[in-house]
Image 1: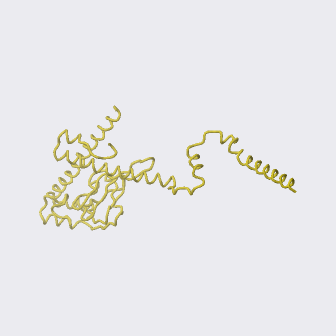
Image 2: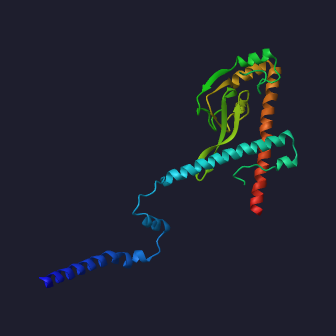
Image 3: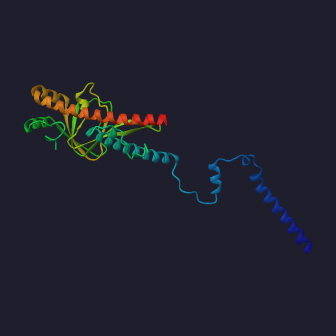
Length: 106
Length: 156
C-alpha cells in the first residue's frame, strides 16, 4: 500500500514536471521569442496581467495634437500681427525685428 | 451701428452716411456661420456692425487642410473689399466667431450711388484704399519677419 502510494506520487510528480516543461518551452525556444521584440510588444507583455491603461485611439491623439498646433498657429498669427502693428505705428528697425513669445518660434 | 466713425463712412457728412446706409441690407450670422468662402464671386461689400468676423486662408497642416486665422474684423470695420476690385473674387474666407451682424452693400448699388454722388464715391474709395493699404503694410512687415526667421533657420 505504501509502495503504491509512493509510485502514484512519483507518477504525479513526473506528470507535473512534463506539464511545466511543455508550458515553459514555447517561451524559451520559440524563434519569435528569440528575436528582439518591438518596444510596444514588450510594454504590452509587461502589462498583460493588469488592466490596460485607458488610451486614446491613434486617430484621436493625432487630432488632439493638430488642434493644439492650430491653436499655436493662431496665437502666433495674433502675436505677429500685434508686432507688425507696433512697427507700423512707429516704424523702426528695432520694432520690425522685435521678438514675440510665440511658441512656434521659441 | 454703422456710423461716421466706421472705416467705410469716415469723412462723410451725416446725410451722406445715411444715404449709403440706405443701400445696405442687414444680415445676422450665428456663431460659426460663413459669410463668404475663398474664391467665390464677391458682389457685396460688408461692414461689421456687431460681433466678430474671422478671415481665414486654407493651410496644409500635417497633410490636412485647415483654415488658419489671417485677421479678425470687429464692429465698424470693412470685410470683403474684393467686391470693388477686379476680378471680384474673395481671396479669403469669412466666418462669424460669435453671433454677429453685418451690413451688406451690393457693388452695383454702390457704383450707381458713386456715379450720382462723385464726392461720396471719392471719400469711400479713399477709405477703402486706406484699409487695403494698412493690410498691405501689415502683411509686408509680417512677411519680412517670417523671412528673417526662415533665413536664420537655414543658416543655423
